[in-house]
Image (cartoon, rainbow, N blue to C red; front, side, top):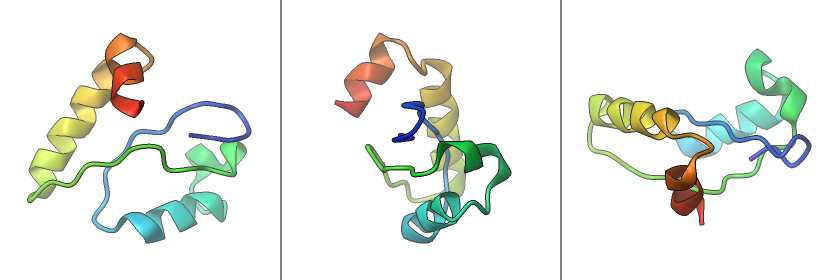
Amino acid sequence: MSEKTKRFYVGSCQSLKPRILKHNSGQVKSTKSGIPWKLVYSEEYPTRREAYKRELQIKSYKSGEAFRKLIK
């Protein structure tokens, strides 16, 4: 969650810690305006394909009731 804008970013990656650092250092154009970012939820999957499938599922209900339940 962006502590500045209160918006959420949903994505997948192989290594979480470096990815958050990249977002918070301004290296990602699409999230630069929301710095600082805070991790509020994560899941792990055995394959990149499964992780991407889940990412799309979460994005499909972003900001809805299902999304709010997920991040609580």
